[in-house]
Image 1 (tube, rainbow, N blue to C red):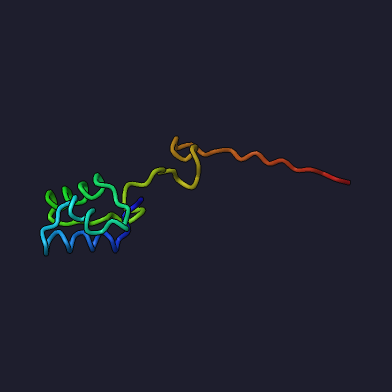
Image 2 (image 1 turned 180 degrees about the horizontal axis):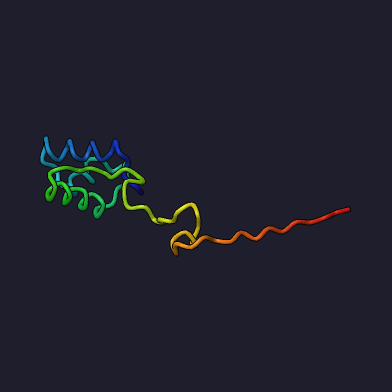
Length: 89
């Protein structure tokens, strides 16, 4: 189960104020159905960076970097557009 943003704030608060570890968090809040590995990774991230910040979606590198003109725009030459006309008479 994915940990929500409110749960991340709760974990951080209990860790900083009451010094709860991952196992104690699981025993105190059994209805949350968290995994031990996910809480451990959050707490390890807190140890390394002194914060538990979840990155916003879309904040990384873009997957595709194509121009709007298409692949011919990268070659520098002008692309010839074929025009097909249909005459229905």
